[in-house]
Image 1 (cartoon, one colour):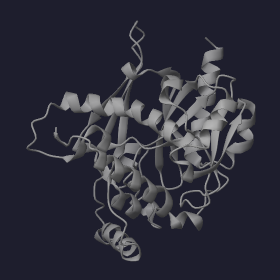
Image 2 (image 1 turned 180 degrees about the vertical axis):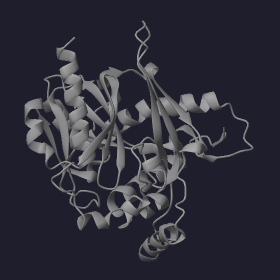
Image 3 (image 1 turned 45 degrees about the vertical axis):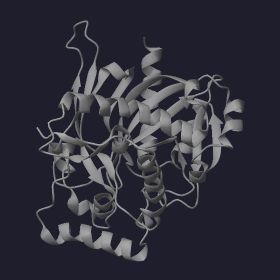
Image 4 (image 1 turned 135 degrees about the horizontal axis):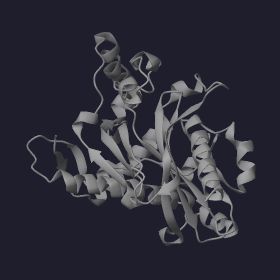
Length: 329
């Protein structure tokens, strides 16, 4: 198992992360304006946890074994660098940066005993360059392997793990954002708040064979970041204080069929009313990413689903499964 290089987070790292996210959302996907999702299957549920998993029930194995494997077709693989070089030539301010790569997961249901169910996420590292050159390549389907096993099928793609939050206000409304027309990925579409867990937030910059850092410490840091990051995204995009968010649970992973984009979804409650949240939204740190906040009852979410990216429509499906599970308890 490979160890990882650790770097203490600094204010500079945080600024770089924020600017990188702006590039990620605004500049990454001009091809999606031409290539849109069809009305057929738009998402696949890679993992459903309708009972909702607490942080103690979610662990991570972070290892270089789950990094992207270069494609054996040298011409296809070379297109990754070619696309990136073209982007940088057009926009010299564009720079690379890291994200966690989704490899696979291992599910433990407790074996019928008194043990709680548990999931272990297997994550590697990827970066913006590989994301643009594989998942967002106009030949993205050529990077896929013919296999029923998603880990094998997507072994040549960047597959950065995104996150999304189903947030319920004190008056039982769900928060939905309408994306800005200035972002590259699905402008004007409805989305749940979210973004990505960040390697930089836990001091990870690379895998490093010579580093003797305890892998358990690294894995624990990354598993905590799964939950910390989704709270951070809600705070930054909606403007609510972190203290108002509670009862966060992991409900599964949805994958958008277009470009095979995996997203981990969480459910959480907000102690504020929908009216109070609307007032705070006007001062949200990342308000540039959206034009409007909707607070809607669950029954109205279906009317928005067709205008959501496939991964977020999958997030809605995960939420519905959670609601049904609660009814049947």
